Length: 245
Image (cartoon, rainbow, N blue to C red; front, side, top):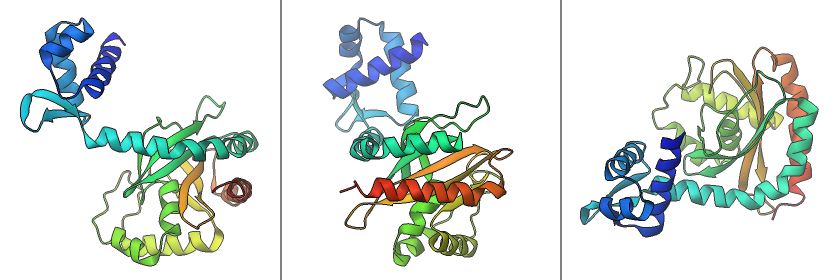
């Protein structure tokens, strides 16, 4: 745990003082250079830091860090508005509820309301969700104009599990079904053993503000519950959208 905390301190110091070098970081943090160097390498390997463009001896944070920060900030207002209804939905279903916001060709998880069950779905905040694999992602795809859907489907889609749907024609059929019934379903498409039901949230102007899902073990969230949970999610969406700008 100490190494994790040190790495976080290094990241925060780089963000505050960038571009900044090893010696200066060591002095600012009162941490040995060798330790700071290991943290810098770890953070760089993970995509959070990179050498400065004109000075490889100094460090800056990456676009990945900016992107996540922007996405989380974008989710603040939505989270405040949605939280009461999402909390009610979590209690009604007993399963984990995830809220995510769009960020490019992915969604970023900005809120999680945990199930009380010991065996439950769990995704860390900040997790990036592939649109073709996650229930939230499919709900988002179904809310987009056809031209944007086709642009997304024109790229090669990588499987995340053995049950991820990657065939464009199969995904088109799923999207049509999601649009018809109003909610998306995945059965172990993002994580083995996890099923989920999701809906998209629109603001008053019609733009998609985010998506939320009810997720749980596939052994408990079985197909006979999809419609019930889907209808509960749609009711929560209607209540939330009344207050969205």
